Amino acid sequence: MNCKSCNIEVISKFCPNCGQKAQLERINGHYIKYEIQHLFHFEKGFFYTIRELLLRPGQSVRTFLTENRSKYMKPITFIIVTSLIYTLVNQYFNIDGQYENLKLQKTEIIQKWMQDHVGYSNILLGVLIAFFVKLFFRKYNYNFYEILILLCYIMGVGMLIFTVFALLQELIHFDLLGISSFSVIAYTTFAIADFFERTKPANYVKILFAYILGSLLFSILVVFFKIFI
View 1 (spheres, rainbow, N blue to C red):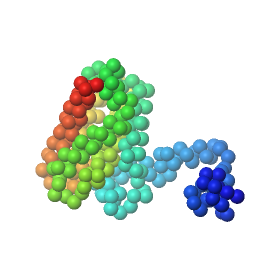
View 2: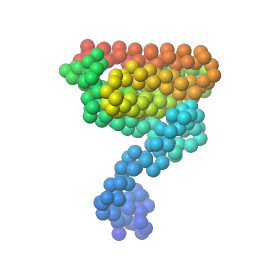
View 3: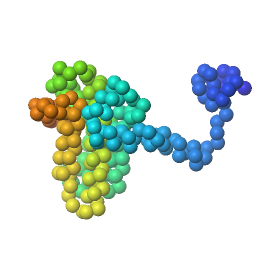
View 4: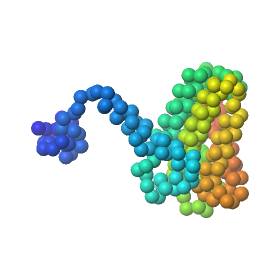
């Protein structure tokens, strides 16, 4: 028979040209379960990545960069999935509505887009923070893209930390916004320091400056685009 995708003759279970299966199995519960597992990499990547980033963030990212990438969820996918989890929890419990000073104005185009696309907003913020991290840690042999991978993983964990505190807040009915924000900043600082050299106190200061400057530049760009639009 010929492949239904590229019309090349198929003599085995898979097309030798495009890899398409010769006979597609029927859609059933097993197929749906496999697709969900594959999406979140439950079978090997998602929970393993979270565990490693919590226990040994610097070492795990270095391992991904230089040794083994098969065990970890891909960084861009990781930050988008974790941001999606946070967004779903946020919308379900209406967390933004509980903080009027942080509530995004839905009439403003940029802020509405940020609210609806937390994952992409985090990637943009990560790019800006990575720029300053690269600037302050330029003596280390890591390029900008490798540092961006580091930021994607770290900010993804940050989204999960926000999610856990949001769920806890819903259970105990107590304002945990300040504690969750401090926890995310503390984890981010420690994780980046662990990636470079966590024994040097000066590194923590540089990381805080990089985080503040990146966040400040992100806010300036948001204001600029609001004015432009």
